[in-house]
Image 1 (cartoon, rainbow over the protein chains, first blue to last red):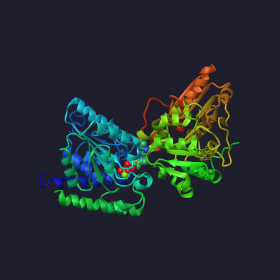
Image 2 (cartoon, rainbow over the protein chains, first blue to last red):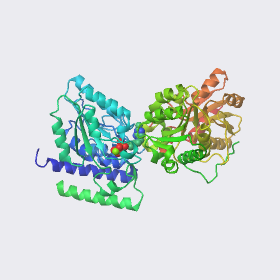
Image 3 (spheres, protein in one colour):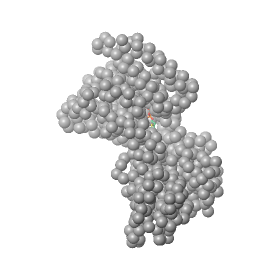
Image 4 (tube, rainbow over the protein chains, first blue to last red):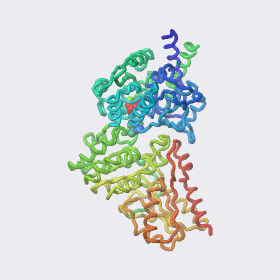
Length: 284
Length: 319
Ligand SMILES: Cc1ncc(C[n+]2csc(CCOP(=O)(O)OP(=O)(O)O)c2C)c(N)n1
Ligand SMILES: [Mg+2]
């Protein structure tokens, strides 16, 4: 690994996080918690592993990413903007009538969005199909799938996992964002997933759990997965909903946040200031 | 009997109307169970969890499972009410509703929220303009579109008295007031809200208020529009259509739904089969998917405002 690589990715993560905060707070509301918990994995994927051409988003040799927990679209948009797919100005059109950035990703609208998602569960099967397509074409392209831990409630996820494991689709990296919470509260209270990693292992996956806030740990897990030749791969990301900003991590109802109280506005501007300081210091 | 009262000030959000209706029902009937799919915060049904913890089930984000569990509850004598967003309550779980529900003669009461343009910022994936079309094809299903909070309350309580599949769509948020608080309705019977000689304007759901306002405004321009709230889209009040279209120059249907398969189609079936020889115009959504935006933006974008329906009627009635 190049010496500055992890640092560069941390700066990218900070930039993504910063843009999520700015775009959602300027809009006044949005799916904050689940956007924040996938910042690091998006940073590592788009900053290091994925093959793409930002000036030619539909390049047919590219790797693809399916954000099955589509409500975290703002995190994907912030990542794509930071990687040059479109201008950061566009981030401020989120959810506006006629926008190219709808709340949930739409592959017909946004440069760099590979699959339309938003109805939870469905992205898992689409990713399975993309992986199959790559195999049928005989290319070494990969598809990266990000699934929510609440989303795992959907039976369709498990149909897709069966398929991915059975077909040994090691070109489909399954990331589970285990941020412990869904919309109405804690996953363990609503529909207990029990041991997610054990479950995926029982489904036939090669599994590993890593700290989802740590770029280096995510990189190590991905590197190890490249040695897995004959098995599907699942990386469980141990994350915190609202990750990266202590105030939002602690906020009880952080699935969808309204930026309408002084307390929330204050916390947001403090987080923005500290992220900007980090970027100024480390990014130079 | 219903009365109009557009100016009452005790309005509540549609979702709270559902919540309160279910809480009322649970006071009298311990068989009533409310099932959610991780949208309790969005629907306000977490309030039911607080007041009636043993009659509230959050199945998690698993809509198909929720419908199946509801069917099983019905098979053991319970009266399940389920909620999720309209598209997930219908098209995502259609086979479960159809087979475990209707075909197996179980009872499932379904509230599908935020139909059509009212999905607002949730965008295209959360928009349903085909729920009525789908649900209408299920044998003996009842399909309603609630015009306001008062009617929503009545519909929920009426559903609890009946066996079978019952679907009501409605915004979660506040809508314009239409009916007086003490209003009652009859399932399958249309409400005439305004009489008129030139045009019969049928609508359902929150667009009824727009239709009525449009008609009142058109009156001052010399166009006399009769307004019908067809809140029960199925079973359709065929007699009311036959009776009230007599002598009219046009029938217009105004719906927050695809013109394929919704109220407009249902009315067209009657008009065609009865050879009524009155021109019919469906004003709704044609061959389009939903998109993201504010409710106001989307209502304009899809041509579903009071101004749009006024304009359409004016065009139709120019001699
Ligand atoms: C089929 C479907 N049902 C319900 C929803 C509404 N919804 C959006 S996000 C969400 C909770 C998701 O929880 P999780 O997967 O854990 O996501 P995260 O914690 O990462 O935000 C729900 C219920 C949806 N988008 N799709
Ligand atoms: Mg979660």
